[in-house]
Length: 255
Ligand code: PGA
Image (tube, rainbow, N blue to C red; front, side):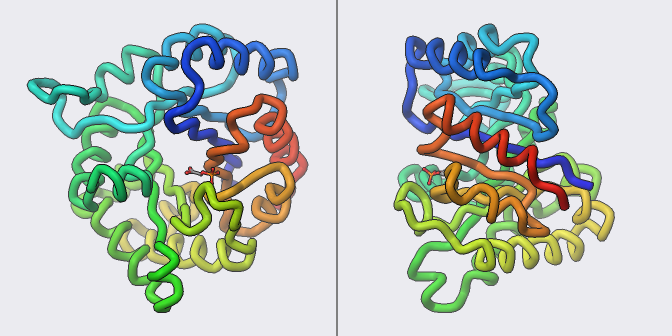
């Protein structure tokens, strides 16, 4: 049985003042007794405030990116150790916006995943096809390339420590959500591929999140699908009540 994971990716939104408000609102809604695991990825400068304001709650905090080297002359970058020291337990790797605007490659995603694991951070590895790729019918091929690139050379034990986020690029921030059936089909394919590279046990345990215009209105139908083990939420994670609503919905899912 995989525990559902509800994660919020704030992207470049919510500086410290807005983070303080959000955390107060979220705490006031109640953060105890949820069955789902909860995770937030604030911008780097808001991590410390969030970690301190959500202390004592089960909410995990993660970084939105990291550099693949441990330290050194990489102006503007952030290391795994820095995230760890700031209180992060997770890190987002290879988000489609990083791939698109900062030219991150599968090899880079692989190196970053390796570094995250070395420092005990849980990598949340993002993969997903563009609209053009979906229309060409090459979705599975794209997924396979991204996933094998990200996890090449990893033993099943290492693969087991990751979380995969399937985010069709055409659904991110567009209001277009993959239908639950479309998402389930790709999630199933991902799990089958994980079984091939890391074995059935690992594939059964690993959580695969869906991301792309997930919100309170569609959370239930997405989370009801067999192979959707959680959500990576952008826009709808910025308001505490929307985010909380999704956590509540996750808690009603029995599968
Ligand atoms: P969205 O973003 O929910 O705003 O579509 C999801 C993501 O990019 O992780």
